[in-house]
Amino acid sequence: MILAAVNDSIDKLLFAGHMISFVVAFAPAVINPVLVAKTKGDGDPAALGRLAGHLASNGRQIHLPALIGLGGFGIAMVLTSDDQFGFGDTWVSLAFLNWLAICGIITAVMLPGERKMATGDMAAEKAVERGGQLTTLLLLVMLYLMIWKPGA
View 1 (cartoon, rainbow, N blue to C red):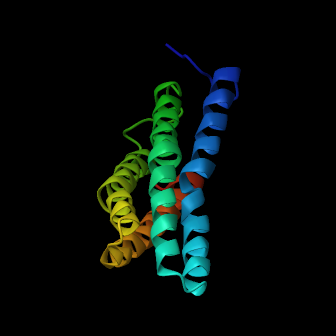
View 2 (cartoon, rainbow, N blue to C red):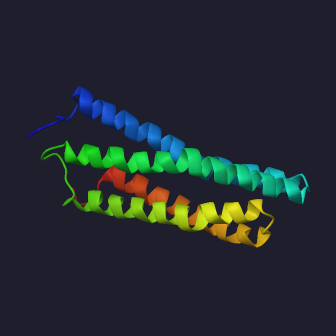
């Protein structure tokens, strides 16, 4: 049974949710490195800890839910697409695995590291930085998969 034909209202609504979730979920990949660099440049070590606390709070309350929503909207688009595309398509399966990897990095590395930095443990900064770099790399892979759909 077709629940959402391509280009119908439900499909457009799911796609809009998917895109809005994408922008909200990955805003920190662009904004956080700039904020951290500017805060470090101010020369106030306590300010970096306060910033990390705000970043962790935003990540937990705004960006992680948007990342979950991104996957939810994407799964809903696959489930309602009928024969247009499915989980058996290479690009869909790889995108799903990529999304799971990003969720894992955010929840296991980035958010705990930002919370540690907020308490003054600046040793966690390197892990947060590496996690951000890996997340950005996976974001680029995700964009490749979504735009060019290899194996389709």
